Amino acid sequence: MVIEPAQGMGDTAPPVAARATVPGVGDRGRRREGEHWSRRRDLERQLHDGPALRIAALTLHLGLLKDKLQAGAGNVQPDIDDLQRQLHTVQQELRAIADQIYPPLLHDAGLGPALREVAGGGRVNLHVDAADARFDPALEGVAYFAVLDVLKHLDADGPPVHVVIRRSEEGLVLDLANVDTRRGGAVLDRIQGLGGAVDILAEPGMGTIRVRIPCE
Amino acid sequence: MRVALAEDGALFREGLVLLLEAAGHDVVGCTPDGDSLVKLLAEEPADVAILDIRMPPEPDGGLSTAERLRAAHPGLGLLFLSHYAEAHYLMRILQIGTEAVGYRLKEKVGSVEVLTDTLTRIQNGEIVIEPVLARRLVERPTGTRRNAVASLSERESDVLRLMAEGRSNNGIAAQLFVTQKAVEKHIANIFTKLDLHPDASEHHRRVLAVLTYLRSQEDGG
Image (cartoon, rainbow over all chains, first blue to last red; front, side, top):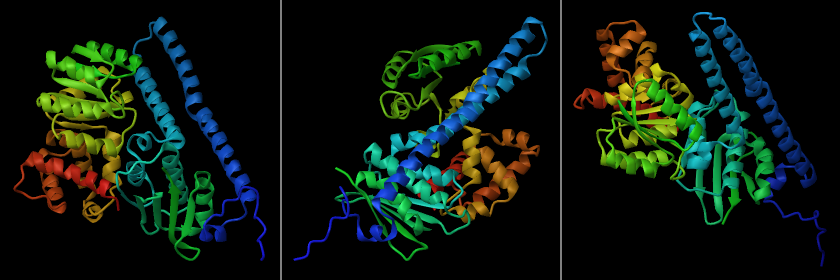
């Protein structure tokens, strides 16, 4: 009897289709860590370059305004309007960053509504077909950002992307049709921590990526 | 105007009360959650209730509270305030009511003029929608109505966007520097192109025109 050598420490065998399309666990783990920390660094930079700098500038403007008022200089209304406009910009920048951390709508209403909001505001033509099923926050977060990552790599004028989300006996099943199936590896990187699997339902190129993530 | 408000953030709540009073409104009460607002309004009549969307009872207490308020006081105007302008919440708000409702960003009601304009329009029965959201819905339509939407002329799209903000024909005419008659003609064209039946009332068709966009959002591509 021949016993196959184990593939590696703690390697839970991924589904065949996924194993065929992605490199070994070591590379994948390293790449996932790398992306995780570069995303965090990027968020910090956005906070610094946007809202933090803007608020610092606003304190200067307020100082000037105080000076202007003390000097009895007439009309300060345009200054105040400008301050409010800038504060609105700060809010918008903070919202954009919060959405990259965990979109509030994803927490409040789930995957379907959150992805529909992306469909309404995004550059890619997106059709979302989802029941009201809710999953735990980690699963919804992972699935949401995995979809966004796939969308990010698509041309704006490509065929409409169709997302179907449903709950099976095992957990979440999410089909992403009309996408670049070469992103399957990146999707697997994201969902593997939750024991998820990726099936590619086409040859490399445009096709359907199926994501399955188990849950209670 | 008599105004009641519920908002769980103490700083914003206090600031809003100060601004309402500065605008000459009578604040009949303010509470940190929806349940106590319902109790308060059972005793104190008001013209408009201002509700934070995300407040207790979780997760979106503003919406569940508004449903109860609309049932108990049909004439009470409802203004929803949020940090986020999302089509999803707008749909839910329009399911609660298509008259005397408003949905605005918290930091965009920060002046006496804007706040009073918003409250007055709601009291008059209009729908007031944050302009940035109305614009996004009209400019980025998706779904089965895509063709109907694409068939609108540029001017008709402008008119529909202003309708989605809840503007009256007069208001639209003033914004676009055209006559009211021209606006009426554009609106008739929009109704035809969106296939809205002439047997419905004018106000009803207006709301349907706006909802057409929102529904096509919900339906997806």
